[in-house]
Structures are given as structure tokens and as C-alpha cells.
Image (tube, rainbow, N blue to C red; front, side):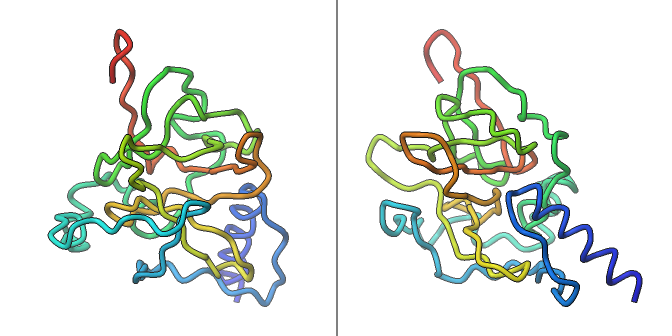
Length: 193
């Protein structure tokens, strides 16, 4: 019984640090499975364009992902974990460039939209915009933790990136609260990426 309470306590702390509310003691720990299905929707721009059917990342097995990612990246990206607040490598990154998905390298956020939310995780007010209008970030309703939240995923490989909340700055009013472990970074060099 005490182990169950400790697990709920850890998840409660994670939720509070992501801007959530206190859970009741009856709340079960979240299902840590990786079942995304086709329940994707873009936050404001309609459904993302589906990656090609031959997308190599959608064919990777759990074993392949464990080989491809560090243990922390695997926990966050494939098991929907959350890194501890104020510990991520990109929290205080001030360089200009593009943040990419740690799972597949797809651009997901531009440093121009990064801001200090005080949450302990890198925060962005908008997702990456491709030249052709394609979607690289998808969202899905997350019913874990006894509440509905909006999960942020890489549209290419389904990696969990974090969550988005409607308490961000203008112009979007969105706060994409993202785990550093789910990101890579491509710095701008001489005005080019």
C-alpha cells in the first residue's frame, strides 16, 4: 500500500510542476503504455499531415527504440515519462536555432518562440512551422492523472514531448511545456540552420 502512495505522490508532483491540480488519493498512476492510435489533432490548425506509410520510425520495435535512445530519452519519449523540473539540458539554452525531436530529428520548435515560463521545463509559445505548412507536432488528449490534458507528440515518430497549456504569452496564448530529454538542438550558424 505505501508503494502505491509513493507512486501517486511522484506523479502528483510531476503534474503540479506541469501546471496541474492536486489529485485525490484514489487516483491511479497513469498508464505508461505507448498506444497513440490515430487520435491526433493539431492544437489550432486541424489534423497534421500523416507521415508516409513507409515511415521507418513507425516500424521500430521497443528494442530498437531502447538502442536508439538513452535511458532517460526512452523513458520520456516512449514511456511518457517526465524529467525532473529545473534539470533539463535546454531549460536555460539561449542559442538561436531549431529544437528537434530526440527520437527522429524532426524540427519541432524554433528558439524564437522559447520563453521562460518558470515551470522548470523549456517552454515555447508556438510549434515549428514548415515552409509548406506541414505539421511536425501533433497533440492528443491525455486522460491520465484523473484529468484531461493535451499531450504534445512528434508527428513523425509519435515520441512524447510534453504537454501544452492555454496559459502562455501572446500571440498564441499557448505554453508548450517540453522535456529537454525529448529534444535535440540544431544551432544557427552564420544565419543558416
